[in-house]
Image 1 (cartoon, rainbow, N blue to C red):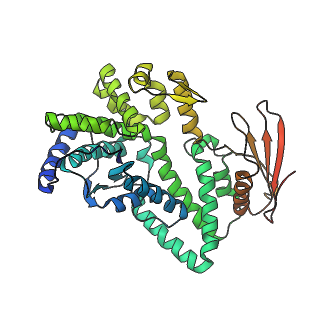
Image 2 (spheres, rainbow, N blue to C red):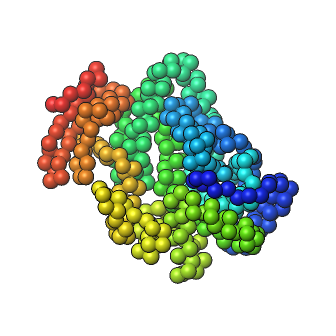
Image 3 (cartoon, one colour):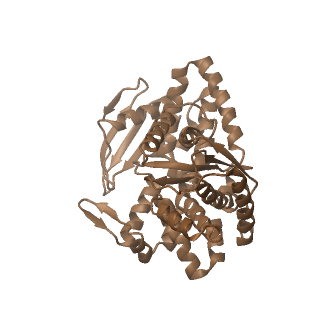
Length: 406
């Protein structure tokens, strides 16, 4: 996805015939640079259409209030000119890139170069190689299945179950990439061991398939957007005039952090080790490995990066890395794991180990445990432990959805 914050805009009128000529040349340049990719289809889309795809994640995905909320936020940012999306590219075969009808010619030229960076990552990165390249059509099948289930079982029944499964999936997202952790992952334990009717198994499988597809996107945000921005800059050197390059540079200062930080890291890697090393990194790394190995104090200083803690802003690379790793591993969500399942699979016991934060036992925790119980269908217990590993709380939701502190 290519997005800009603020009101900077490149100032040239679009001409699709000219753009097609640029696209053909940029594709040749990308191949000469060492990139490889599946066939890319470019299409026009209105800003509303692009915002809808960005909110839902796919062009045709099941309706849910979470996606509606995301669309409303994107629409508001677009209309207030806080951020607007120039392009949206899908990890699929063929790769489908939607270009905004509001783009100028130069914006579209930069977008085309950006898209080939994404297409290269999708084709070569070891994590993206594992993803379902037919997810667009698979998600459309999921829409039809969910619509049938809503008619058969009732919208509320289906939507409540979907909401619960999506909530647990989001909170367990960091365990998707670590197979060794799945025995304690609440999402996978519920998927594998909770008692389900046929329609519930179908819904859980849909959430699992789509969550794992988007998990890769989350784990490679800085690598993916950084590579696309870096490639874009490399490819545009021969296609923009001096005045156009100045306009382009101004727009780059308004890009989101993933683009600027990731692009700066690849530029640093090229300077130190050569372009061949950049190709290696884009193939084998994810965000955690990318940042841990290549983020330096020089990059932090050049981008004026910092972490605000209380009234102070820390600009030390180690502090920034620690904050980044914590956010990437947990998404700032409390990590509740499976501690035990009773012999007969009736009672599920969870655990939460307090580190830097305590649970909201008055608001979010009761709602969350009730969602777990809806999926488990029997009693759910949660043990909480302090920083020293000593148990300091026990909570329960019974089969009647009654929450209490034991």
